[in-house]
Length: 87
Image (tube, rainbow, N blue to C red; front, side, top):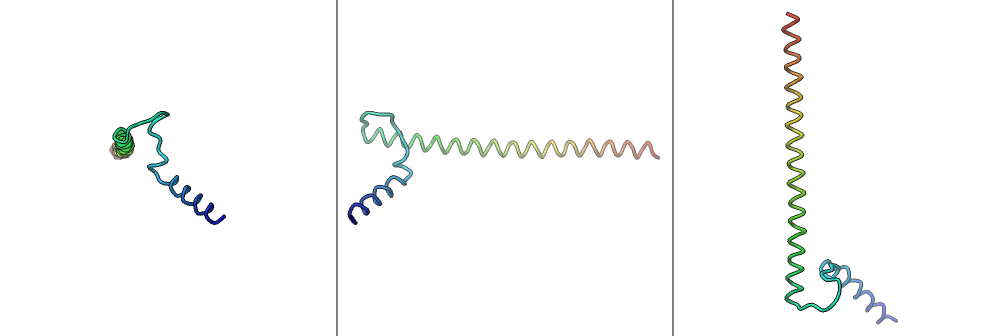
């Protein structure tokens, strides 16, 4: 009984590891070197995706600041025009 519990706990621990959960092939046999290559390629692709999303977020934040400054400038010019007409 205790041996089975230890065995199942060990299997669950292995299944929780990230590299074991990732699927690299839909079926069939694969050589170890090919598996390592595919795992590295998949990790690189995931890292590039994270980097791409970060760049998009940065660009959106910069564009938002530019829009805000533009709106502020428009409002300032309108206020200046009103002050000149008042005088």
